[in-house]
Length: 86
Picture 1 (tube, rainbow, N blue to C red):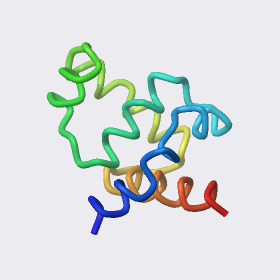
Picture 2 (cartoon, helix red, strand yellow; picture 1 turned 90 degrees about the vertical axis):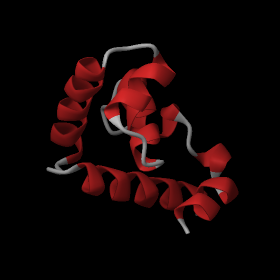
Picture 3 (cartoon, helix red, strand yellow; picture 1 turned 180 degrees about the horizontal axis):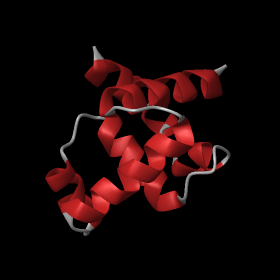
Picture 4 (cartoon, rainbow, N blue to C red; picture 1 turned 135 degrees about the vertical axis):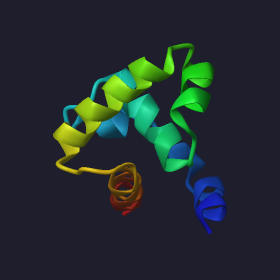
């Protein structure tokens, strides 16, 4: 289900959507990959950063979104994308 949602809304997953929430472009990129189920190591490889840097970005993302878990951050991502499609 997540994969089909991703395929149908791929163009909506743009870092600019998340900048209005106070996320940096890099944080938004990390969040987009989190929403696709990638691990910190995988995201690090994709974005050419260490897994520890990915974790630090996640800590900032959690704080800015007011969530405490990776799953909550991913769910928030999907809510934002759905709202942007309206």
